[in-house]
Image (cartoon, rainbow, N blue to C red; front, side, top):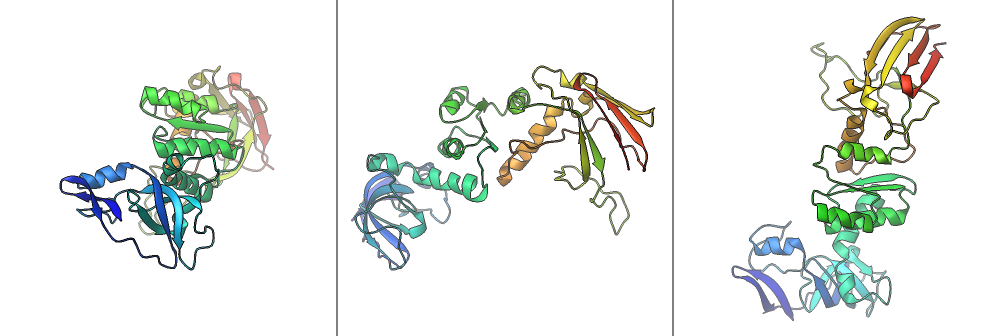
Length: 338
């Protein structure tokens, strides 16, 4: 059969044997194949996984008809229209593992359309659905969303019923495409104003007091020296409870850095401060948290309460103490320890 291989002089078409079908393999008669960036990297002499050097078969994704199947294959049969990923798709026949073969979903989808789906679709379905377990009503931030894989993530999230889908790109022209592909917000991740843009996805801000009961080891158990913490996602590790105010304020109509607080304990002022003391703006911490979670496939979910950071020092409390926290335009709250 004819196949496209890499060589020292670029891509060449050569005659090679038709691959032998193993128990888990599917052999496909190729009708269309996609050109992936990794193919160009291999042609430039770079390694892509285990593939590199002259003679490497090119083509990471393709579509066609099933020509033969192994004994372990159950989900497709000979003659089925399929789309696949693997190695060697730029050929008359291509062989791949059964886990990389998907039936083409509609008869009106052409082989050419189907050939461009497998890499992006499998990658982002695994990231967003299988591992990320995105549920309807949750929110998602997709970094670098303007490339093929990112655009697929936006569409999957919207199809899944995500309440807020945010995509980032440093290219202004590409950002314009993100909303058409499912993004509710399209942001420039290098723009210092993007923190303010993220606030557009925030329903409201409200006063909050955290009751601290730390389960983090504060002193090294061997040296007895206080531990230094540079980056911490609390995840309730120091949280015994939260007291929330009743007033809900639009974050886009309030100058949050200038919001202050007066904390009184049994009628005596114990602490005062401005929200600007939290990294200049409370939204900075929220943006940091979203970016810190994203590489691990985690994201902030719709309906979650996120503490943006404290601008007053902790005050020791005992049974019977009454605290009053006055946040000015954000409202006031009072509570008592029992």
